[in-house]
Image (cartoon, rainbow, N blue to C red):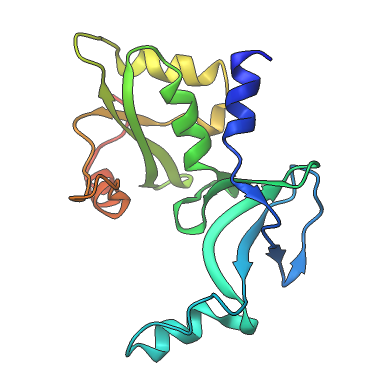
Length: 189
């Protein structure tokens, strides 16, 4: 099995994850996107002393994770993005994870995080924050061209910013802080 195929298979999260869209299961076609939801005796009862958050999280009696995913024909689940991280550009949905995956394939890229940047024409556009590998070099134009060769043009980040990616103490990327930074970044020169 070739490395790209192994990587694709390893990116899946497991089987028997119920996916819902409009509270209906999505087909196991690897394309139909739904939100991962679950319920059962090992699911939490709610948020401590926060009934509003509990009510929002358990609409329809299911815990809404906020993770969007597809079910592959073999039953495995592949997460495509977090619902709050989807970028809506000119009415088209852009998966931040898809764009990050493409950027991570570039040999100079150590890490990448993609967030929505407000845009007057399109509403939102993709903005990438990139950390380069030690002693590596890449330009914004080079990375945009690299993306253009692999994904649809509307998904290519309109801005790529080179800086250390903001993370929590546990190493989790803080996309909410990157969204704030993206608001203050101008358009492509």
